Image 1 (cartoon, rainbow, N blue to C red):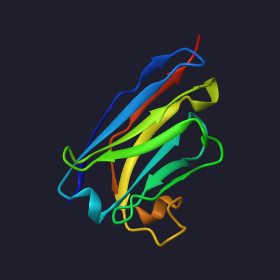
Image 2: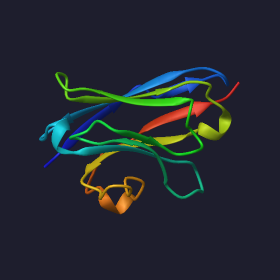
Image 3: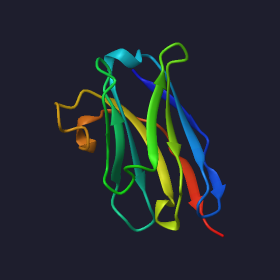
Length: 125
């Protein structure tokens, strides 16, 4: 069973930055694809980014490409999401998840059986 401890959320002004952390236990990062998803109030869950276990290849949703960067530290077994140039549309609860999505299908939430508890990100002046 994979477990997560997410942290790093908070309130930030538009244009600001935050770094989310997802500390993973019960599995090693080279074995899982780790995805970041978000859900804003009244909206469906949205895929943000993912990093593959074996290749460390990164993919991003168009809405965050060029602003967000996913990375991982295999020693700390932690995945990060660096978020820059934040805008109010980025306000959401952000979740990390672990699974084995087929290549090209990392955006599918159904491919991830393990989910974190979420961390709130609020972008507001």
